[in-house]
Length: 252
Ligand SMILES: NC(=O)C1=CN([C@@H]2O[C@H](COP(=O)(O)OP(=O)(O)OC[C@H]3O[C@@H](n4cnc5c(N)ncnc54)[C@H](O)[C@@H]3O)[C@@H](O)[C@H]2O)C=CC1
Ligand SMILES: O=C([O-])CC(=O)C(=O)O
Image (cartoon, rainbow, N blue to C red):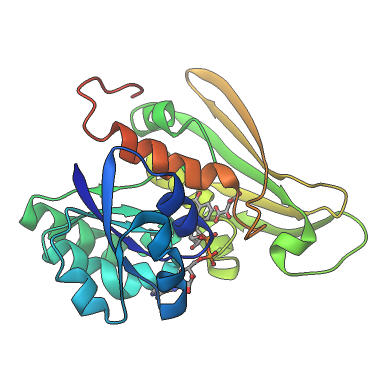
């Protein structure tokens, strides 16, 4: 079984620790040591207070479910230590020189960086946008204000602009837009709405191109422990881990 290290033991990390199958989680790290210790019992892994000690373990894959800044701080070291990496805080990869550098590190060590589908679906065939003519990629995201850490009493458009500008302002809420941008290799327009009347994190993806039109609407249940994060995001990592060694690859 693949040996996994968990970087980030908050909401998503804890779900992975409890529900993983087909892989062996052996090491845990969180900037808040108590969080890593708190999930030890869920998976029988060891929590480490020092990142270097965590990374020194015999890991094949590090699963990042921490933050954009955790990716910025640790991804290079993880890849250069010869580990594959699953990156959920994909907003970190908007920085082109940083992303190119991580790619070069992965190539140098013969390792892979996996970007899970996270809180959206449809990333598989969105990759056709890399080779097709595309006139529009729009993501309209709507969350309850509590997910965005604000209080309002009627729907409000908080942001309209590029995915790159949006992730700078909302690094915990719009990583999906960057996953869409990386899959499509096309600039993504984002509308971010806060709606006190909704109990879902909704992502509507609208794409127009030479192939026709795509509309995908995902109405996500927020995670119980972190309403900003859709439960689907944790499930997407669990399914990625489950299918890593499947000889049949489904989807583009
Ligand atoms: N790609 C996607 O579709 C999605 C991405 N996300 C992202 O996934 C990440 C995890 O989400 P949650 O588990 O809900 O967040 P969370 O806030 O519940 O847990 C994050 C954990 O990581 C730890 N952490 C943060 N920075 C760290 C660092 N530099 N080093 C070590 N530990 C660090 C925190 O102490 C916390 O325990 C977030 O960055 C979130 O924005 C969430 C949903 C969808
Ligand atoms: O979980 C979600 O619905 C989206 C999210 O937080 C992100 O993309 O960062």
